[in-house]
Image 1 (tube, rainbow, N blue to C red):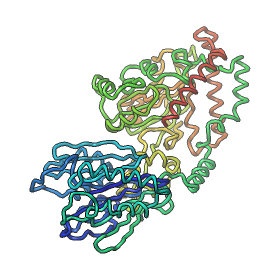
Image 2: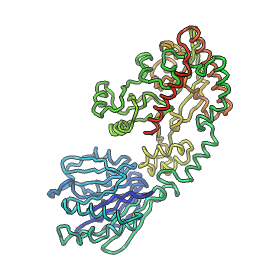
Image 3: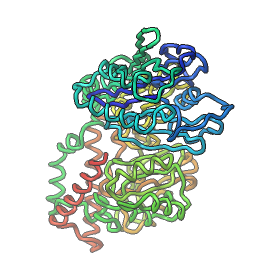
Image 4: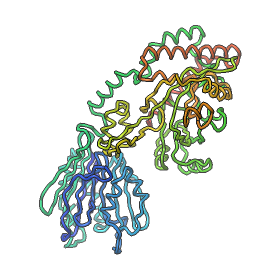
Length: 595
């Protein structure tokens, strides 16, 4: 645990440690599989204290321990717990970095942990007084040496040795990395380090994390000369880290092919073009919908800003939130959040959205900082409404009529899995077609938990909001349309200036209170760009979907024509429509560049 390298290579990452230890210390137990808090780990065990200096956590997470913080320290006895056991405490959680920041380290000897989780490389340092968490570049090689044995000159020599070795070594293979660590200039007793005859490099341990095979540990005991290897076993064979192998691409293709609800937008709507042209001919405009909602920019087809729409809603019926402009600093955003009394968890979403792209649940400040740093568009931060039900209600009102109608309700079942006490999270996901389509996104959030085994009956919600492209199952709840619910929604919508056609996405406590107008929140109000999303119920045929889409086109056509005839709003010109489309394409490219 005294010289460590991190070396990214093609399809692999190698995290390797030379353990420099007193020669009278009991030999370590070679790497074995252990289960800590239902998390499978592989690590060599210190025979004296029972901890470890290097650990592989599943196929995606790893950590290595170095003695000391930023400078050599004086030993102060007694310390209440060994650093190797602290290492296991940290890695035996679903969020090691968060656990490091939260745990009490008083009376613990200074240490540094190099932590690799979810593709992020971080340095966690306890200097005896304060904790330090530093983000490192995971795309570049690194080398560290314990400050307790190696001064700055020796550390620089090691850095230069690694640079030279990388220049001379192509391709980088695990055997070559092990040989580098076994070299005379890397082993304590044969290096130029200040000599202590009682200390030697006693072992070299290499962790290999790969995108196309199981993670493994290679352990070389320099005292006995024995070499041991261990590989992760719980995950189904052949599952790559990035889920981009031919197998996964083929499986996703067949899932989408068999279920039209996953077809690309163009495939669903292209057969309906003649019907669109027929309505356009009758209206003498391709943009026949554009006067349907005079109170919303572009009638809510595209490019409307959520920050302009929410204030149109009755006060108290939508989530409290703030608008964050592109380029705002973390300090500025935190100040705005404090002024608005907003705290985590928060929902982040682009101010101008598109089919759920970049909608995320932010559970802690680090999530917000990551979201802020990568976003290239204005976004909203809203309080998270944790009501258990979410639906989309399609509403319309013919101008001149006193009351509106509900044309559809869609229920949204969030993407989730239920544990059986025996099956790993990843295996549960592999049994769910909707989850398989989301594995890329889920790996970024739950990757270091894939090997966990949920308790029997435990329900783990993976995407806590109702978005079809993020795995939610949509259910046609047309039977839930009642006179009472219609009247309640109509009273809300008639208070929205210039709104006649669109979908309200609502979270609520239960159906009885929703109908009574209590305990609900309008998450979104969408205009003419709304889809009647009840069509995506897997029980419905493609022909049903086409019929419903055209039915709603005819409704919006009628509303728009009446508004245009009454002078409430003229139809958009073709020039205006093209400008709207160009602005939307530019905005969408910005969102997809960060997605």
